[in-house]
Length: 603
Image (cartoon, rainbow, N blue to C red; front, side, top):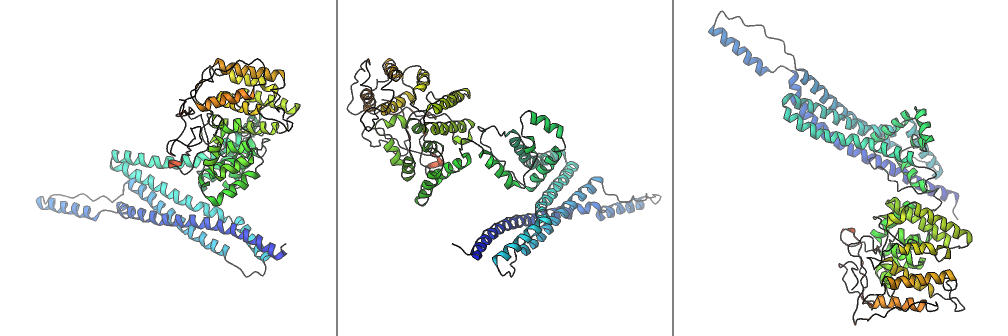
């Protein structure tokens, strides 16, 4: 246990570190600004040295004019010279000098304000002789509240805006000068300055548009919303525009009422958070009300971290501990974080599988592809671009996947009904077509047999690339071979009339579409396992024997198909692409090097 003073001291250290990091960020911004302000002031001064002369009469030109008059009088004594006109600088010269002097003044004022802010921050962080940690914490809070009360943060935010304004004014003067000199020069300068100014304006207004749009379209009832990004173009001027626009929009209640009636979150959109960090947190917590508890952003962070850091042995144990603590089914972790879509569709994965994959990815994949596991590991995977969680289809697929697993773990009449209803919703959403899969769930309930038949009949006939039917046969054969403690079959497919009819249907489809035809040891093994698993079923036609070649290889037809395999690859490969060498022989020995990515076709 800790004493009161130790607890106060621990709290003070945490708060002091937070305060120190905040002040450090402010000082770094001010230092960068001061450097730029100094360089910019030097550039403007160089221009002003020349442009200032345009406001005064050129003594050289006056001397030449007088000499001309003297020469004319010498030639013609009767010549009466006209009175010289008073010097008046041109309007453009006055305008250009006004702009450039104003630009220089604003740059120097921004530098002065930056120096003042650094002085204020130094005093804010100065240590005081407090007797206790509680007193130090109280002093820190007093200073912090005073900073906010006297708007020091607003002064710091204003400093770069002044410098940016000075730069824009200088550009306007430069364009004015180019216009008075030559049209071609003006066009060139206008294009270059227009691009820079356009980028500045766009990046200032994009955070406003993106934030208000995403907040407005975010519905409390929309648990299947897409991955929300935040606009990274954050700046003091963008924040000022955002706050000012929200204030104006709040003055239009009739527009808000109209949009609220149409289902838009108007009042959330026009109520800005305290700062950009609070805005980010509002996006991050938008999925906390999700009943599927998918933790989208945490999964995406773990997906990236495991890809980049799994090669570091010191971090693997932490990955294992974190993934084990997630309130998600292991299959969802394997798909959302480790990218094993095909494997998770056909096997019941456990936390030990997650631990094994993190411990040794290559060994795990070679183990899983042995025997009939090859068909499940290299079956067709959803045609969703990586990263999956960035896609609305991928997010919905993950949510359904997690929900189905939660229902299957406590199967009963109610959960079967819920499962059927969710599958219907899955189909209504159009996800089977979007992910380009025929089979999209794994469950033994008899009420789902018609759905399996529909999925099967979606295939036109012979074997396709990454054919899911072969993976389905392998998974079904494995399921049918399960035995209870009494040695009897555990599957109701073997003991019920609908289940036996379904097995007969699959068996006849195997023969009709010649799925048993392949000169490979692996395909013969698959058919042998199927025959052994279904030998108790009456009325099955015999499967024609296939001649086995002495050295035969069956390679999953995945080359060039982004929808197949989709197993996790090594993060250390060139270009960030994950690589894995599948085991293509029936002896379990790899026949390709790490650079020869991937199964190709059956031979």
